Length: 328
Image (cartoon, rainbow, N blue to C red; front, side):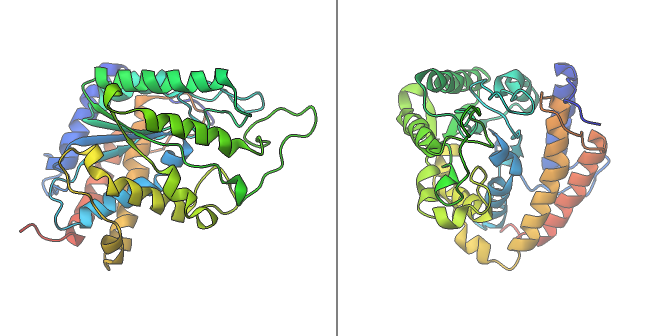
């Protein structure tokens, strides 16, 4: 059955998620063998379908887990939602009104109590139309409101620039005369819109109390390899480029933390095994948490209960723990 996510009470979410976060880092009474994999701050990733795919987040977490010099691995929660915007806009031919992060943001912040929120929005915010001042202003206001709400929850805000639209390497026909612009019939020059959005995000900084990491520029440097068959969603190469860019500025996310590399970790013989487990855990735990917190995108809710998802995550953590370097 297709449905939008339910909205449990905020009190229920806080109690449930608090218990899950504690269990994930310390073990619990029903998981006496729980391993202490994550002792650092809580970092929540928000965004549209690029973040919801989770690949760059999986790369980041795997690199941190395998980095023998990183002992305070953060508790990373990926709560990206496909089709989402920060602007609240939606195109005429979209199969349902695009969800807006502001509909769920307060619940996310109350439930997860993050130390840092990393947000990547922009791809959907121009709704695949030519540039307009009105749509640009809606994006700017949406991003400013996101920063304000994150700060109001006592967390730090980190923005990623929108990735590029890959129409230069995966061209998509624009609309026929009389057809509306949209994700299936985008403006052929839509990447120019995202370039303006990214340039604006890069102007934010100290006065806005926000850190900015540029992922657009490094993807552009690998554009031909970063997209195949789909100009909206970077492929695994594009996600790896994003992960490298973020890890190279990891101290923007965790102040004082050393920059973390991915190349040495990716050469580690344990990389594939650990990353597969990280991705499996994310599909089970983070996806279920996304639905427990609630959102307005149609879809099918994961079948397991939150308790089942927690126990599965604990089992996966034990598997990951056996692959990690021993603490010195």
